[in-house]
Length: 364
Image (cartoon, rainbow, N blue to C red; front, side, top):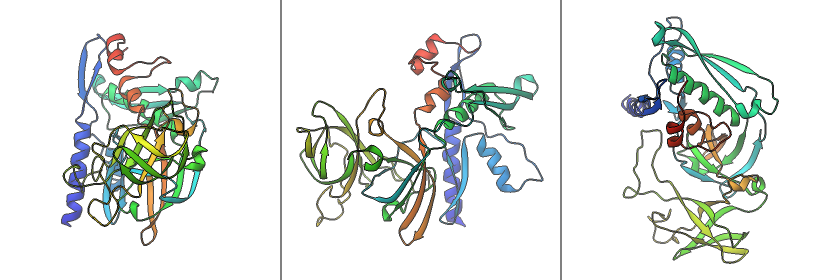
């Protein structure tokens, strides 16, 4: 029908734009060159059904198809912003599994048809060097990517598989309410929980006066530290771009700023800025502005050892309506920083930026 066609057309267009992103890297002579991120190539097998054929195409761009609310949809693994704040205030029956589990596989071989060798089969590989350096044995996996014909894309795909394997065992399952009615597979969420953190670093805002937010409980924080706060933002057509057919329904749905406290035990957070923060109650003058908006606090640390010292992103894997406006959600840990390694290569134990990688290293 027309609505299904609109969904699929916009999602395919979004996928195409991601594929057409230009990647800059150095070739074997040390010269900067560019290429598109992905190709939409595939091999059509007459014995395969249409869904198998579509999945082969989507594999080349790190994408998957799924059915949601009766519609056929696709989503790509993409470095996008999280769209929802989740904590103990809007979910229950939370179960965390798989943390600190090492990946089962640490070396990936990607077979592809090399366009520079008359499309003969060639191999690119990537490994988790930090895992191998600990004495972990080599455990490899071979993947055949018939739609990839470019060496650099094959190498990026191998690095993608390697980097994604770091968090593939870490899942969270929880039950949520009506605020998840627009959530769908592929959405990224900012999730934390008091049981996970070991202390209260999340909750709901009761009100905001000036730049001081009063929250729904007392927190024990350090007056000498600066925290990062993520707040579930209100949505309107003026400050947000609404894209009902695309992978992300709207942008700027999480507000981020810094926060400090004036005392160690307090229910007031001093926000660094409120510019861009919208009330979820802005369409109802009878409700208190900002009342009941969710927030998560992070205590940034360069070498985090505690759950609350780093933003925790998760990707929705599945969401099922078990009763009217009640949802069973399964999410998987997501590392947005992996794209630096995927696009620019491994860090090999030193901290490098994309620009420094391009100036100091050449492809071999």
